[in-house]
Every structure is written in C-alpha cells, then in structure tokens.
Length: 249
Image 1 (tube, one colour):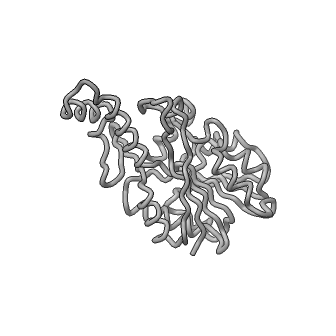
Image 2: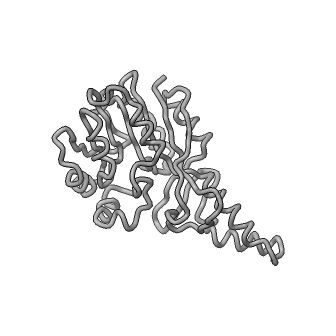
Image 3: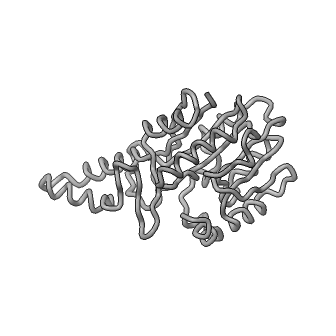
C-alpha cells in the first residue's frame, strides 16, 4: 500500500487492520523491551508507527521516542495518541531512513515491512540495520507465511471426512483463497493490493544479508477470535506472526 492508501484507512484503522497490538503489547515484545538496560537514557524508534498504538508504552520507558511513518494521516493520529514531549514524529519511508542512520538504540517495527517488491525489501532491511548504533537492537514483528500453510492444513483436515481426496483439496483451496497467494514469493493479493508474508528461513536470510548477526525468531500468537478473515479452529494451537530479535554484526 502507498502512503495515500494508509491515509484513507487512518480514521478506521482499528476496524480494518488486524494488529498484534490490539490487545496490548504482545508478551515477547513486552519482555524484550523490559529487558533493555538503562532505557531512560536511550532512543527508541517505532518504524512504521501507524496510528501510534505502541507509542505510549515506549514513551513510558525510553528517554527519546521517534515515531516514523510515511503516511501523514497516520502520523497525525500518532501524535494525538502520544503528546509526550520526548516523542517526535518523522515522515519517512522505511526504505529511505538516512536522517536516522546511527541514531537509534532500539528499533521496533510491527508488521510494517509489507512491500512485495524485492528491491524495496532489500533497502528496508538495510535501513533497519543502518538506523541502529553499533550496540543497537532490532525488535520486529513480521507476517508469517507458515501460519497460512498451517491454516490450510487445518482446513483440509476439517474438509476430508466424507469427501474424495480431490474434492477435499478443492474445497480447501477455495476456502483458503489459494489463488490469491504466491507461496514461492510469500505474497497475498487482494484486489490491487499485494502484501508480503515471510518464511522463517527468509527472515533469517534477509537479516543476515542486511548486516545482523544470529537473529532469534519467536512467535507472536493470535487467539482464534482475533484472526480476521481466516477460518477459526478453537482448541487447536493458535496462528502466529514472527517475532525477531537481532543485533548488528
């Protein structure tokens, strides 16, 4: 989505965007932020801050907070969400953050790296590294492609009883909207919008290539009543996005 697309959804953000921040800080992110030493003397950047949901929590802990987004409407709502004097807003594309290079102790990005363009992805991951000081820390949440495949497995298991294998597969593909996914490139297309999802191995590859060492991956899980347009399977392990913790090499 382009900046003007996000401008259009800014007023209805909570209704149209499924966010891992909707119920507060996800536990892995909360623990990682709480473990940052001397946070009151450090600068944190919320890269792709959206409407500023995360900003109050960051402002309560860190000495300086940079709220970064390329949508003017999102930034306006972010500023309204957190008016603390040590929070500043910056309009910038995540693939072009030169003014912030080397200024950030902790970079946080929550489902903001969504471009399917491989060249822009390269630049975005490089910029996540470039904004950090040498001893900095990246904390990120990225949409998980494996979770979509997991959803497909659960749908297929539900659809198998009483059907031929071919019919069960066909129903699974239709329910999952398989035609909208490109499982090689990790994308989902809805109308004119294409969104990027990430495999774990791809995240590790991109992070290492961008200059991070030993990235650690965990999960931000979504209860079944918070999975948006996906099918729901109460009683089964929940769906997830990837949680990344990485430091510069």
